[in-house]
Image (cartoon, rainbow, N blue to C red; front, side, top):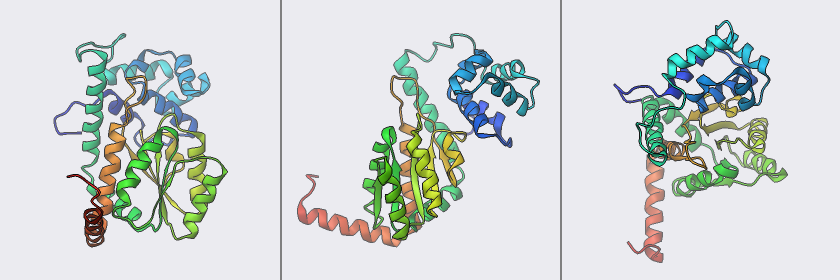
Length: 283
């Protein structure tokens, strides 16, 4: 987050979980609270349980795990953190303007996370060294995987897009590992296809290091990934907005380029020469 900026409700809710070891069920509840901030501060324990797909006692145990006497105390804390009121505010304009401004907030939070350049640089080196480099994205995440892979193929000698599920997906992960792959980049976005999470488990079993771009530090991907890079998804419109995850993907591609600058320059020059020879572009 930029210096001087006011933390968004989702960020303040996330701070509740820092340093707390959560079970998979508790991570689902935590993710639900983040995803629905600030309105979740006015939901009952039963309503939170329904949203998260867990039992009501699980919500109570979750509140206790965070150091509260019960869910009512946690709800009061959530109201304090989010500064929310029933019905919300209309100061940000109409619903379309609010959706766009929410994306601006997501990008601003991502910019703040990127202050730690070493982590991105290390992840870029990890992916640059994987030959081949499998890139996984199913359902809504498939276009992001394809977009990333299109440009990554210009600077990496062997990028393999994995955008179809089914039994063949495990075959392709194992084949990539057999061919020398050491890591896989996975896009894991809501609503978190079961096949994607199964594929992350299979990738680990095949000996691959899993790097996941997902929407939250408490998303289901954290159970199966070695490196988690989070960028929030916009949920104000009928279908999700993936502006921040797409931006994070291209930042990571920059880190891959920076990990091997000489090879990157050579490959880009070779492509430009080929494009000019074939007159691929008008401009």
